[in-house]
Length: 309
Image (cartoon, rainbow, N blue to C red):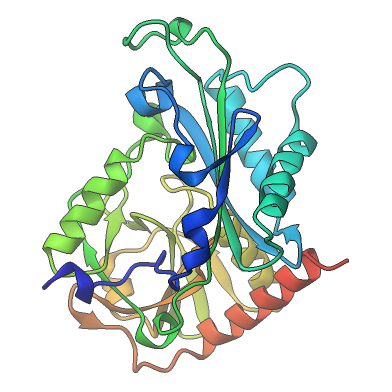
């Protein structure tokens, strides 16, 4: 199967305007072709950094406070100093300046990256990062591909797992994504779109790019959250289910339950809720997705409420 036949939850409509965007790099807005960081940067050299993906709707960043809670918690946990006195409002200014410079108010996606910064020598020790953090914001015109909701994503269970917190806690949205890249490659080599990753005990966990949910007999299930990125969209779906009397459970479950699910879907900041068509070649449900459709509508309303006014 050729790469062109594959889909991903990050498939976007082509937009030529992205060829000429400007990107925020350490205080400057520079043309895309000139947006570079040093080869000595700790993010490039070691994957030593944290990032957030955010969506712009109606001139506002959806669930901004939730994203900042996660970002600043992660930076504190790994002792990356973003700068004295720099807080979420300063980050908001960076995002707004970048979006405004690109004429963006809606259907835009930001990848915000903060690394430990440039190193004095090309070695591992954090003390070699002596020049302050590197902060980059890439904001692109980005609308999810239109056909994916009907078609759905094909998953393959992969041998690569999400590990224990004492190896690398999956709650870190870190630049160190090799674990997920390997899972993605394994899925593609199995002829699927994305990899379904298990936890260290063999229970269904997450995909290489998104959080994973199933629907069984009117109930919504997702993993315990112990071994996956605790996504903002994941939590919003759980909260919406609770608020609208939809039974929802964070629990251990195996591939047996996943294969026999009535529906399955992925959650992420970019694609919101993306249906899963099959797992390991097994069709999920009948193709009707009433629960996924309902949750997607509730989430759309929540985003609209969060970004209005």
